[in-house]
Amino acid sequence: MKNRYLVEFNSEYGLQPWIVDTISKPKLNVTPNIAYENRIGDCPNKFVWNDIELTFIACALGDTTRENLIEFFKTYNHSLGHTFSFKLITIDPAGIEISKWIIEVQYTEIISLNDNGEGFVARFQPFRCICIF
Amino acid sequence: MAYFNNSKELHEKLGRNILVPQLAEPKINNRFIVTFPETVNLESEDKNFKIESWLVNSINKPKLTMGEINYKETIRGHMPRYHWDDIEVTFMSIIEPSTSQYFNNLAESLIKKSIEGIVSTPIPYFFIDTLDPTGVTIEKWKVIVEYIVSIDFGKFDLADDKIQEIKVVFRPSKCVNLY
Image (cartoon, rainbow over all chains, first blue to last red; front, side, top):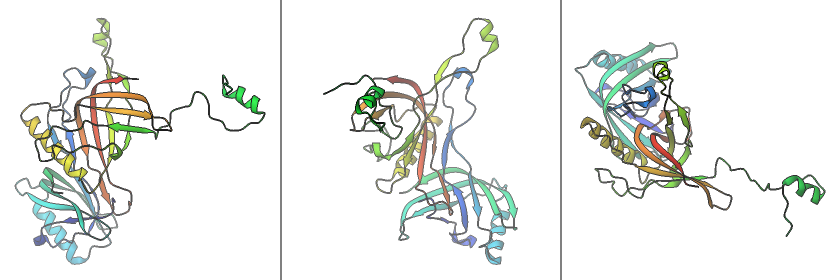
């Protein structure tokens, strides 16, 4: 099911796995610089992973989590030098992990940082997505 | 057994206006089966993975479109080319064998090949069959795949309790209606 998931960040950030409201799963796409006009010279150029957009639950964020989240984005927002990874886990009704992705992120960008109900919306640019099982 | 030329004639014979099967029965959108090749050439452990037909939730049928008109070429007498539009196939994501893992391996293979400058088609073709109510194939398309355009693993949402799907977009080089 689409609503049975956890997003596990590294424990040093102090972010619980249930604080993500929505998250897009990885999407592989061909780069757009293909000559589409009349499909002349139409051949795939390069496959890349699309950006992953996630929304954090605003109402469930306590002060500590919010501070941790702000610290996290202070470190990684618009920072090309810092890479990190997180796990995207699908669980069954009994809470057992049935699918696990490891997403390695090379670039992070905050889209919206609104405390008035909308919460944090961020965009991660992955450079590798691995489905372990 | 009496034969009737059309349903109207049958109605008149029966003397009542009831819903009867028409002689030219229309095909139904949900009676289809998509068959993929037995094995897919992947450089991974999942070489023998078979994409089962029942994993397909939905699929576009082939669509022919004219390309954009380039007026400079039109003046010279060249007509714009026709091409087959992309075909989007939606798969159910199941636990075992893991559909996500299979398509992830497929994605890794595509990335690796594209870095080397090779256009790989791990799924070279597939068939789209239309079935009648008894399960007999009454229409068959063969789609020859040029390459895979995208693999979308979907989205997680706490407010959505639908099943997970994986969308794969194929660019066909040729679509043949076999019968």
